Image (cartoon, rainbow, N blue to C red; front, side, top):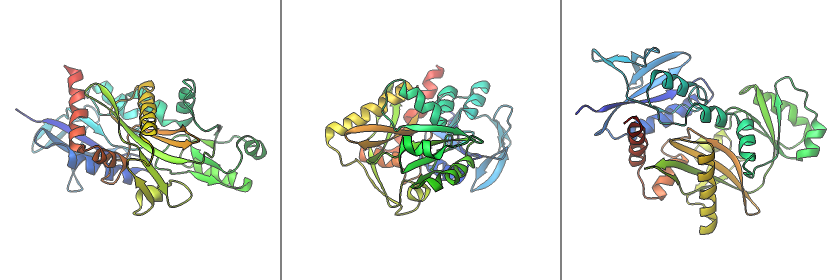
Length: 329
């Protein structure tokens, strides 16, 4: 029996390009080679290529996502999307694969587009009374009344791109005179930004995935950044943060956090592996953001959480892939 072809897709056109390559490499290595034939596909600046030993060995056709390998035309059976940021996390690639009828590992078009834009996602979840920090929304070119912002949200505040990830473009603002510069920094990543109330508390990250038809929340990770907040360096540099899995919380709070993460997963109609982040303040889990294509490097939260649960990444990837094929039957 021929193995099904899995295209692990990496790269993209955002600042998260390098992180995506590392995540995809770990997923590529973890796919069960006894069941599937994985290929690494890199997308960057309109060029789609199949990689072999970090070099392009084939060009991928945008017409049907096919490529030639060993003189044979290959069309992948499934796309395992590991692009953080655009076009993998904002719904663009999902729309493409829907049109050419290739199943994929992530949330669908509408969920991806909604969750990628923090302001839209926050307001959707607020309608279901999900707790979160208060925030103000600005578009590039808007006049920001600094006094009104501080009066409403206080100081410090976080200024962040409304669309983006890996903490690129995020600034913790402690004084009024930093606010405009911080908004310009955010606009380098996105055409709009959020100015968000600072919520002081324990930061938590919770993986969630539908496995065998059941939404399964993973064990929460407690995040203690070395710097002011969980910025890019804290996330990806060795020693940038202390990460404790499971979080140092009573069992009842662990379960409450997991229930809320699972509820958000269902409300947003998520698919595949996602990560939901919270700040715990005064016993309340405040929603921070959702990552529909979370980091999957060897040291990322998801592999840590699976290890703590006695599960292997390969096992979970198998279930995610198999579930997509079952939907085609």
